[in-house]
Image 1 (tube, rainbow, N blue to C red):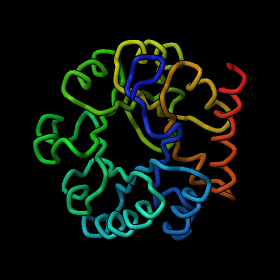
Image 2 (cartoon, rainbow, N blue to C red):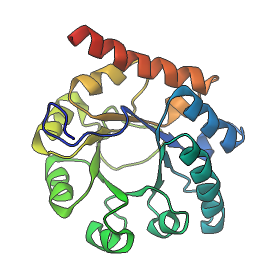
Image 3 (cartoon, one colour):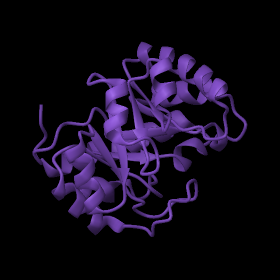
Image 4 (cartoon, rainbow, N blue to C red):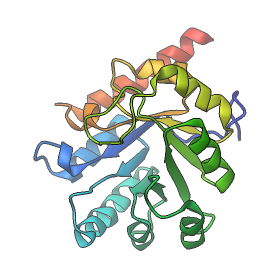
Amino acid sequence: MVNPTGRGLFPSRLYAILDPAEIRGRPWESVLKALLEGGARVIQLRAKELSARELLEVANKGRMLIRTANGQWIVNDRVDVALAADADGVHLGQEDLPLSVARKLVGKEKLIGVSTHDLKQAREAEQGGADYIGFGPIFGTATKETGYAARGVEMLREACRAVKIPVVAIGGITEANVAEVWGAGADSAAMISDLMRAEDVTAKVRRILAIHKKAIGNRQ
């Protein structure tokens, strides 16, 4: 199945990132349930402060909750944990395990996403067999030091034109600016802080998804 841009169809317009370090002391299970209740269906587990054992425990419990909601569970960085927890995929940074090696380990059935920061990296990820790319930081980010300046909406637009696999925009994306990244052609918008720090996560997700629904309606 393809979308009008010619790229593969990403399963959700919102790519929610669950980071226990960003949830203000709330139980991560309750935040995950709130994301799912709001309609989030692709969720990445990003937990750099947890040990491998702790991360695996969260990944296993999270997988059960997400499968019940027919969602997809992506583990950030850790191919070993993604495999051990039978997650739906893994997301790799430029300094993580090479894409070719990760593919040999996880096989063809699991998703592999790759963080990219310029057109060269985006094309290389596509050619290497990534299922989707993350592109950014679009507006800059307070949750991760990428070493890259904000790429902006125009460069995002170029990246979307440069590849035929789905593009997930990331970096400083909020409810206030998410329409800009969708308008630039991004298949999905990744969010961390604006979701994790929301007083009502479920309501936040619903508002974000409603923004996309309204935008689509306006173009019809």
